[in-house]
Amino acid sequence: MLYTERVEFILQQLQLGANVKVGELAELMGVSLDTVRRDLKSMEQSGLAKYVRGGACLPETMTSISHFSGREVVHIEGKRQAAVKALRYIRPGSVIALNSGTTNTVLAQEIIKRFSDLTVVTNNLAAAIVLMQNPAIHTIVVGGELDGMERSTFGHTCESEFARYTPDCAFLSINAVDAVMGYTEFRFSEIGVIQVLARQAKQVIALMDSSKLGRRSKKQILDFSQVDILVMDDNVSEETKKKYAANGMKIV
Image: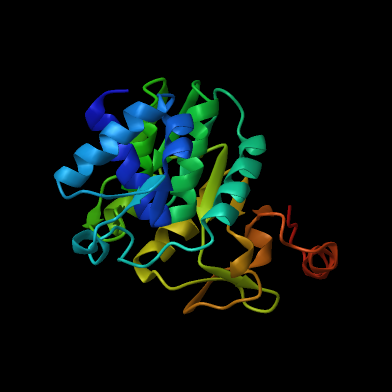
């Protein structure tokens, strides 16, 4: 991995989790600890990161303009645990779709470590940048209007392009779900994309960390019957899974 590619990857990690550790970056990128330390120090000199003992964080000048609408990404470990679980539903040679959202960006990070013979169709530009690190993965970016803060495309063109595909599996990053309203979302521009993918995909998988369970967002977008599986981290009790199963929703 070239220096510029490593910098882009480190920035992705910072914007997903607010801080990074040297050891974790070395493992993820397949480079030495010394290489990571040199990269972080160089990024600090360029104003891209703040080097701290054992890792780095975003400098104050960048936290206000970080990706995904500047919102702090919390529950990053839950997102990653859910993403790793989701890998079991991906088959080599298949076509999958990812919508925008930080959880799907984390999923892309896990995909590049484990797959090569795969086609990914997405409006998630952050995920596309991650997927570029594995040239063996065929990545198709769907066009449309650009949401610079969410790092995604949206709108009529985006939805029409997605409607031309019938992916084997669609992984949907959604804001909230509860037993009464079903799946709800606050990103109004993303709702059409989610609903198109839910109609087109052979298998529909919602991908969320468990903090979003039992919550409601701004608008109802899907009911339980439109999603085959809800993949979450391990912080969901068997009792809760049975409660949702009674309403027709499978949580793994």
